[in-house]
Length: 493
Image (cartoon, rainbow, N blue to C red; front, side):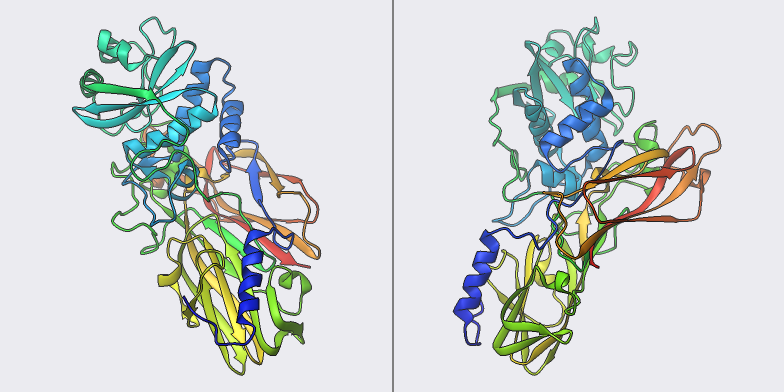
């Protein structure tokens, strides 16, 4: 931890601590972009409500299937997502940041979703083959959904979804299910698992007691701890989430961040195929975060904590030992970052990855090693003369499957914030960039994008001065468009 050499350091530290524990209206908080055709994954409650609304589900079986289908869209096979303590990885972080996991992690996310729908859930482990599953209880019985193996099974009379005890008592519930049309219509056992293996696993399974909401598995906690997908942006900042990953910019070590079964999970899937076919095998995605406050604009300074300094002539001029703290927490982890700072006279930079509790000295330039896989990043400039420029350019990681993507046809897009009030002197800007997509008749497989035609890239920017704000964006073509990016920005007038 760095001990500041400037006078009034104790006062500066106290101000930083107070800024962390109190809320201001200088930043745009809970900056959300949602559509009428996609799921709002900013909370478990909005996720469950949107999934059920969009599916039109009425019965509990229909609701559970709809939630299973959403997780089939949002998650793919890879390693367990891990973060170093004190950070942790909960269901919302898995969905919004990573989009991947192994069986126990994916089923912990499913457990949280089912619990949010109001149902008890229990883990059920298999010894041979080794596998971690969950069962959900509704309508007086237990039901088995496996989002990792991509399966569920209707009872033979198609009255409800079977549980694992049902399968043990009558293996034909599984073995004859495909021929009798009692399996998911899309993506059933798409990654190579077998009906025989499922029967064997159920026979070698052990049911745990009803799970607590806080119960998790491996690196995935039952609920998120200290994390929110709700974005906060100060004036002068823009976050652009792209639909492709960048080489070397995956934050988790020890994994490639690519679906381990190639394109199998969407190749023949008439729902997921058109959404994911444009990008190749499912993988991590990146985006860019830029922050460059204009010191001549009061709105850009509203979220900057100043000590012994004031804006003067387009720069921050010190009266003694001055400092400026720039609070840049994000809902997506920093993968890499560079910092620009220009001083008149002596100046130093510091970075905090715990919201201003501790600081480490940083040099202008590449600070990736200090911020990688961190969320609550702040920067501090200390100067005796003036700070004439400050800017951050960063790459973040996110899961494109959880973003408010576009469908072909009309999309009603809503922009909102925590209190639907804009900080004084600011506007919001939301930009969608995409390519309309047309296919020549029916596609039997969705891993061959060369068989479709992509129009020139289209960019649509909406400037917003009053909230909540709704606008309509229409995409042509006969398939969901190829998404390029969605950008949220806050700009001074």
